[in-house]
Image 1 (cartoon, rainbow, N blue to C red):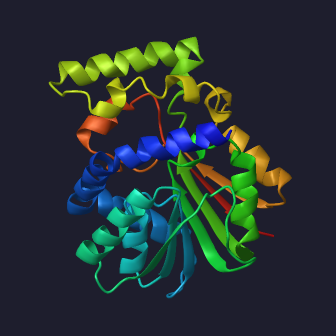
Image 2 (image 1 turned 120 degrees about the vertical axis):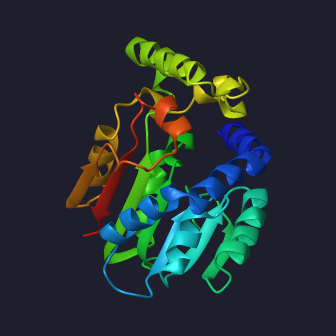
Length: 252
């Protein structure tokens, strides 16, 4: 699995500019406000929370959280992503309390019970050991802390005929609307490693709920689909049959 980890790290390091452009579009247009409201509705209603942004990428969640006055620790396996995250925080939330660290979210070099909340977006599908990641995120949460994870069955079409059919329908709809597919949709370099990852074959978010229950969470809630306006028109069309979900769990 070390090669798998390195392959994914290098892949996302090479996609920093493209991913950062997506985040910038979200921050400058309506999607950012929808995401911020969703986070506010699901985090404890108090200022100055200590929050872990697990797999922060170019810093989108870190910026939204810092804008609301929270103290954010942003970690990612890619130093290149963290460089962009630091630049984006300086640009979009210069007074924000955000510190960054290169770290594998499956093996956090952080103390127990450090955070009031852990948030993550589009990370768990990448992981060779997602159950270990959930266990680590719960470890660093204080009792009563909140874990919020956003993800989707992004690559179910590689393993499921029905998902593959609807994937083709959505790709065709994108083309018919006059959009060009972005590089991520036409890049075949991940196909081999994606086949070795466990969550592509799982029914989610059901798997996530079972995993968190087994890890001792008593209050687990799932939301899908997410609110309207969470994506721009391109991604709304591209993922019409791949809805994002939110898992919210409270540490016992």
